[in-house]
Length: 451
Image 1 (cartoon, rainbow, N blue to C red):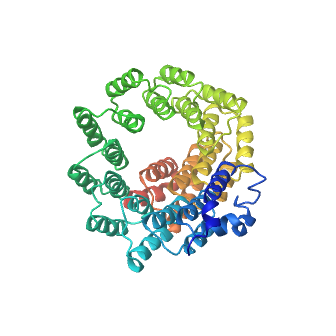
Image 2 (image 1 turned 180 degrees about the horizontal axis):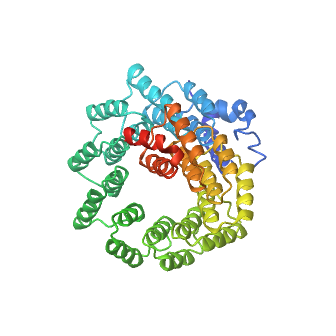
Image 3 (image 1 turned 45 degrees about the vertical axis):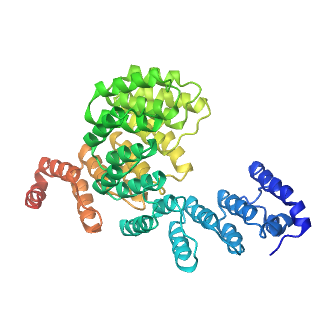
């Protein structure tokens, strides 16, 4: 459709209006609905005019996607007659941003099979992120290679991420080594990939190689390698990285500081972890509070963990699941029955136990350690989808409270489920329970045969 002179004269005002909606998207007057998109916008002169010009229409596609309404993004996209690579890329990214991974792959397939538009290096990173199996990932890798964009730094880094996500770090490393040029994102992707796959030594070796090539660590690199130092028990490397942080003025980077707190906590250096937290006065986030609370809980100083939880609440920071998991463990250590009931009530009000098995497991363990085994069992029964930790926590709870028969009953229920396989923790807890009880000698012998 050709533009009329009126449309051309008003193009700048249309663009300004779209930008204004972006800036005002948090205003309740403009975004009253649950989705956040005013329904009359779809029928306004703004939206009608925008369909005749790709650039403005794509702003609407991105706007709706940003607000979580993919259906409106798709409707706008479908009304664009002449689609180019940017148009397709925007729609694919909109799907990925809102978790519609299957639709993003279908959109790419449609682009390849029904148009002459070729994907570019902006097309592949979001699609690779959307892959939920390595077969699709390999297929997309082949397309990228065929189209000659495989060695673009963004595409190559996304390929490394994808292969590491599916435990193929060796393939990812081959891609990394074959890159003609590597930027900081590529190095970080490979180091992070090694960490995800449990290759801590390879990650540290790659870090040394990166430094030899004169590439400076950024906050992402540091936040990635500090947990490896703790995992390997390598406090020397951890201290050297901390000195690097101070030298390059990265102390106030929230990701770096949180990683430092966690590292020092793993080494039992609570004073240093506390100092870093205190220096973060301006940039603290929920992760910072969680890291310090967990540091005290993991090092058996539950009183300090509870103290900082109270301080966190005073500062108006709302706890999340990780906060409550650490808090439940701290309460179990202090044997505080009053705090136990308060925390459980807090969790129940947020309906967290049915939503998160980790939270449910923590509450089961908390009640069991306080000797309230009936409460522990009640919470256990409320967990809709139990994992092996849920069963182990309940078996351990009965064992710790001298209820061998009930522990064995839970173990038998676990076996009957079929979809949960006992692990080393199960055998240990069940075996000790059965062996300590003379009445259960038959079950102990049966366990020995199973082992």
